[in-house]
Length: 162
Image (cartoon, rainbow, N blue to C red; front, side, top):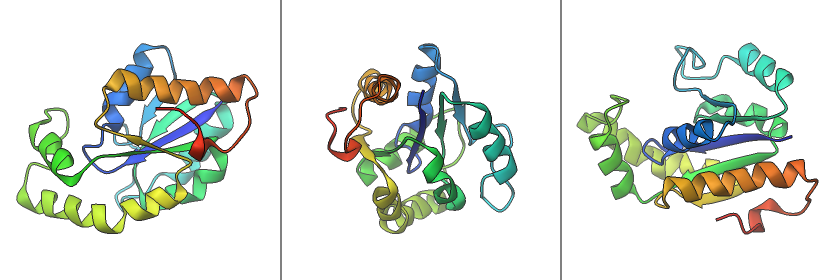
């Protein structure tokens, strides 16, 4: 059983890879939707605690200030990353989320790449290139889940997952 957090900047591919994992039968929660994030931009901590206490097998995605408080409850923290140009193109073109459509949003994303992404990188156990095909990203995360299920141990930062 394994709990995995998928994090990264807007446009990195978190929602897309979660959709792929759901299609493979995994329990996957995208915290950008359904009230997981409070008005102050943080996770609803009691709700997240209930989710993680009640599910041994779950993939969660999100990027919020208080996610670090939950890192010890995840077997893996996966950072999806991509160059700024890729992120900006994706948020401009996507149809399922309005964030990134304005120049102010895109300026904010550029700032977050400089200030927030390094913090995410420090907390990640694995970093995956968000430019990879979604099936390859989902395969890599699935291998992390199954490695935990199968009792594999080792330093996952150096694991060959992608």
